[in-house]
Image (cartoon, rainbow, N blue to C red; front, side, top):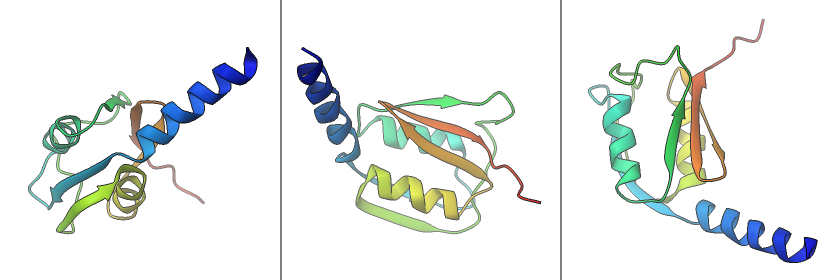
Amino acid sequence: MKHIILACFSLFSLRMFSQNVTVAVDSKITLKELFKQIENQTDLNFSVADQIDTNQKYFTKEDIYKDTPINELVVALNKSSSIEFSIAGNSILVKQKTLNI
């Protein structure tokens, strides 16, 4: 029984990572607008830390990600913003980046 549950969880996780999205990111887009683009194309939802304002514009670089796997998009967004994205199950977690001193 454990093996069946583990296999089902693994398949579910692989399906989440294999979802592809097409999104446009620039200095004018808010997090809320980005979330809407991703949610309209996937089964993912967002969990946002309290200190993050979803109406704020966090991106400085303009990019178009075309048919990009969601895990690759998360890596790219982490490089181009002041916030941190991570995937947990069917959620994308969003929090403030921690400073390494």
